[in-house]
Length: 101
Image 1 (cartoon, rainbow, N blue to C red):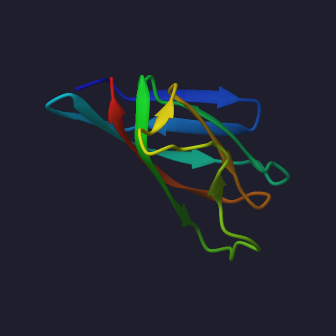
Image 2 (image 1 turned 90 degrees about the vertical axis):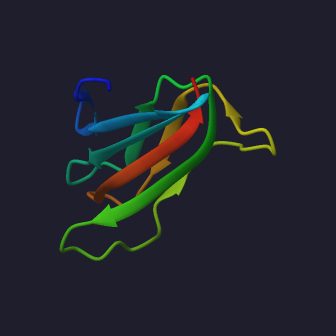
C-alpha cells in the first residue's frame, strides 16, 4: 500500500488516501479540494494507463454544473496517469482511478 500523499497546485489540491492492487490493476482513491475561485486541476495518478476515473462531489454547497474529466478515453483507456478534473468554482470531492501501473 502506498503512503498517503498530498499534492497542491496553488489552491487546487488532492490526496491519494488508498491504493490497492488486483492483478495488473491498481485502484487509487482520494480527495480533491478547490479554493473559492478555482475550477479544478490535475490529479497525477502514477498509472501507465487509466481505465476508469470517477468523481463524486462533496460538501454542503450545490454545484452549478457536474464535475467532469477533461481527457480522452479510448476502448483501451487513457494513456498516461495525469487526469484533469474540471469543476464549478470551489467544488470539492472524492475521486477514484483504476488502471494499469
